[in-house]
Image (cartoon, rainbow, N blue to C red; front, top):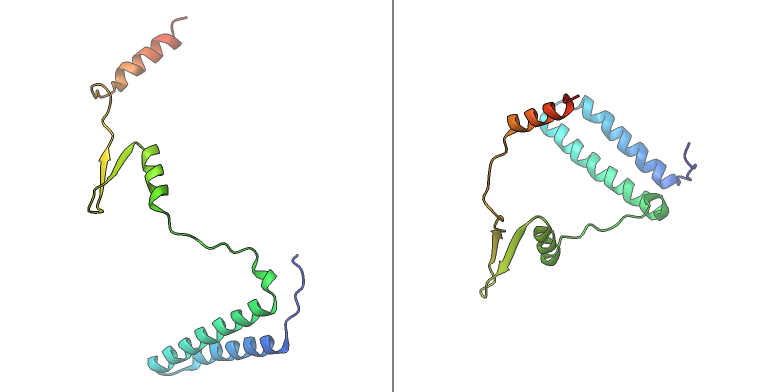
Length: 123
């Protein structure tokens, strides 16, 4: 399976505390008590994950930061998709679809089917 990792006593204790809190949620009587315990459990789990990350940063792998797309990249993708973008002097962005070349005609699917059948069954 995977590589065995050493877990320190502090991390084991934090996991045990989180497990005990999870057991208490089921036995809690009131809704407010369950919410309080669930909030405490969430904080303890996050704390435990932080401890584990500090103990072995390589265990989390190569995490890349997800960057927001730049306006230049969006403009390039829009151009590839056939959309024209213009920036006016006041900073607003105007998006214009590219004009189509020639008249727009609807395809005739029945005519295409007839041509295909005639070609295939000519022999």
